[in-house]
Structures are given as C-alpha cells and as structure tokens.
Length: 381
Image (cartoon, rainbow, N blue to C red; front, side, top):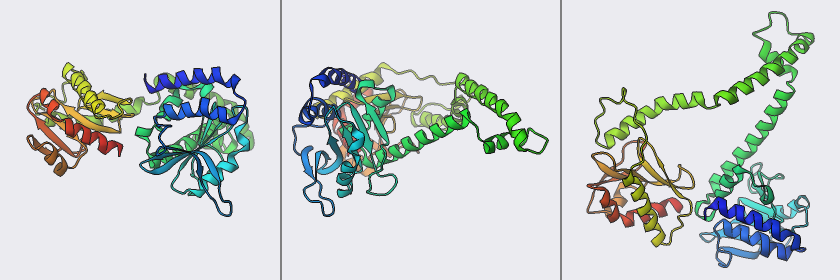
C-alpha cells in the first residue's frame, strides 16, 4: 500500500473512531499514534519515539512534550497532543515553550488527532512562529497534502529542506492572498501603474475611478487567458533550449552519434531493460532492509533516474540503451573505485553526477549490489 492510500485509510479510521473518544489519552492511542506510524516511525522503538519528553525552559522545570520524534539519535519533531474534542488555538503557547527549550528541533506539531498544525521558526531563530506554516485536516485531505506530508516521512526527512519549504509555503500563501485581493479590488497605485502608458491625460482621482472597472475586466480576461493557455507554456519552451545542451551531453555519454541531434527529436521510450533494472534495484534494497515505499523512477532522453520521494533525491542514473552502458552515481570517484574494482570507473559528464561505472551489458547491474546500497545510504544519511 502506498503512502497516499495509507493516509486515505487513516482518514476513514479517524472519522469512524473519533465519535467514540472522549479524552486525550484515547486520542493519542487511537488517532495520533497511527498517524506517526504512517509517517514511517516505529512507535514501539524508544530510540525513535519518546513519550513525555522533558523539555525544560528557563525557570520552568519538568516541562514535557507528549511525543519527541528522533532520528539518528537527535530529536527532530515535537508533537503536542490534545483531546479530539479540544480546539487547538488555545494551546499554541504551551507548545512554543517546548520548541524554544530544544534549539535543535525545527518542526513542532500540535494536533487533536484530526487537525494537525505544523510550526517552525521563520521569524526568529529558535523561537516558534505564532502561526503554523501548514494545517492538515485528516477528515478533509487535499491532493496537495499527500505530497506535502511525504516530506515528513522518516526516510525523506530533511530538517533544513523542510524549513526552506515552510518558508516557501508561507510566502506563497501570503502572496496568493495578496494577489487575490489586489485582483479583486485593485488599489489606486496599482491602477495608476497599469494605465500610466495607456492614458495620455494626467492621472487624477477621477481618471483612476474611470479606469477601475476597465482594469478589473482586463485582470479577469488575463487570468482566464493564462489558465486556458497554461501558465508554464513559455517556461517549457525556454527549458527546451537549455535541455538540448543536456541532451547532447547525454548522447555523447552514451556513445551515440550526435550529428543529427538538431534535426531529430528524441522521444522518451522506457525500455524493458530499464524497467527490469528498476525492479532488480528495488529487490536489492528490500533484501537489505531498506525502505522502498517511495522508490520511483523517471525516464528522460538523458538517463533513467531512480529516486526517493521526488526527482531531486536521485541516487542512481542508468544509461543502458546506448552503446556505452554506464551507471551514474553521486559518490566520489575514489569511493566507487573501491566498491566496484572489477569495473572501469570515471568521472561522470558535467551536471549528470559525480562518478559513473562503465558496464559491458545490462546484466552487469546484478554485480553492483553493494554500489546500489551505498548510493541509497548516501542519499538517506
């Protein structure tokens, strides 16, 4: 069962269970613990989940947070639990004290088992923000929630990345609201800015009022036009030019002729060898007790990339359709030389990775088990 399906199943369970819950302790056991489990943490391992974690702050001693989630021996998330019948807005100050007490923790959650509020410290370092950067309602999951919560899973948790992501969410939300208000009720300065090259007369208050309904209509038409044509059309076209350079380098790396690259468009065709290789790599990691829940692939004209959660978190890139077959990694060349001494190794092409292993046939991938595991561990550590 995938992460999305697990969350959807939990959503149904929460809806069924909540009517039978009347206190905080039952809320923890029936609603909150299952949520932490879905995120991939072992709730029965005291090295990962520490209930009633002591977080002393200033003169207040013996302050305890309901759950501290640990990874690699350090706390990464605080979870403050309340009864499913309580509103969360009354308890943020308490969580703030916990958060401020342990400076290495950058993510804090307050929840009543149905609603989850996520906090960090964007305004001032080690001081929890007054407002959450993310609110998730398990009873009304949005499509965006699945991708967002995926970033909090144990195997993909990256504290610094999440803080940057939180900042992006906050600013995007703020700008989104500002733009909506501006487009709905454009102020005088905005109208003045828009009509400065349109109106030949002096822009007075009466001129602004005359143009106000015209500006509103123009904004409405522009938004409709953007939606209908696709906001990213121009970006896609410009990226195609940049991508051509990468494609040329990839073809060179694969040992293919490049004379006709400008006249022939290469289509992305995922081969059976690539799919079989992906399944083999999954099997190797599974046997090594690695979490493959979010393992996926993306095929391009440049390479067949294998990643975790999102395409930026890749750990192997395969070039096995060309005459020169190779496996690209993020490991330093000196490191892979010791892991796969029987194969030729070299620096990877610029912008593709750190190093690559030259293989003679697709089946040679079956001789790279240790390399596969090492690349995965490098990504996850």
